Amino acid sequence: MSLERSLELFSVGKFEQSLALIETCISQEGKSTDYVSLRARIFTRLGNFDSALEDFDYLYALEPFNPSIINDRAVVLHLLKRNDEAMAEFDRALNLDPKNPYRFASRAYFKDRIGDLLGAIEDYEKAIELDPEDAVSHNNKGLVEEKLGYMAKAKKSFEKADELVGYKPEQPSNLSKETESQSPIPLPEIQKAQKTTKKLTIGYFLETLNRLVSDKATQQEFKDFLKKKLGRK
Image 1 (spheres, rainbow, N blue to C red):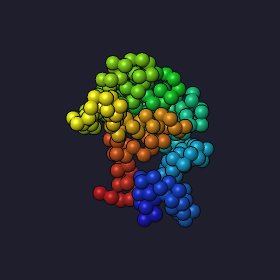
Image 2: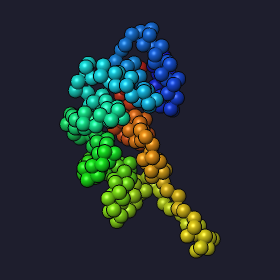
Image 3: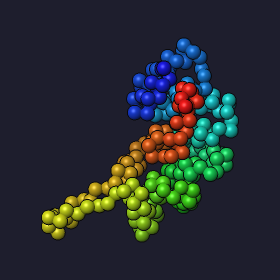
Image 4: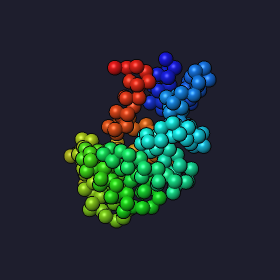
């Protein structure tokens, strides 16, 4: 099926090819919600935020109480620099889905990006309370704590993230002390990824649309989407 193939391409980052397939589906079969939902996310990943918002507005009109649509629409509003509207939508998604740690983590990162660092920490702590094994939230909380100068707290957050992903720094025994001091200890993949995305214009929010391997709630949403739309059991 074209939809199934488009989803597969999207999941591995082949967004242009995924878009071409989903556009074919829409032209041949009409503007169904599953097609538009995927296209909106592809547009977002491609940086075509105006088109993404049009699609999310269409979906929102059909499902005004769907927290996933509201949350992803908030992402696009932020990327369009419409932060007051984005905050209202993040709040609404969370109010509709208050037991989902991903909602708190999403709003936390948004607050970090707009400079509300204390608010970001508060939301990360709530996300961690709901899911203590979420290494991404522990790591991102550490990044915010670093910005605030809370170095001891940041160290603790990073250590917890390391523990959850099974990372243990290694110091080769055959190196001299001078060589050891000059050789950086490799960071775990999670920290590399997060510190890199902080430098990007669209940053973490584009990654949230493809967090199928790192976020349990998003992963389950994706599986449910596949089962519903593709008829899988």
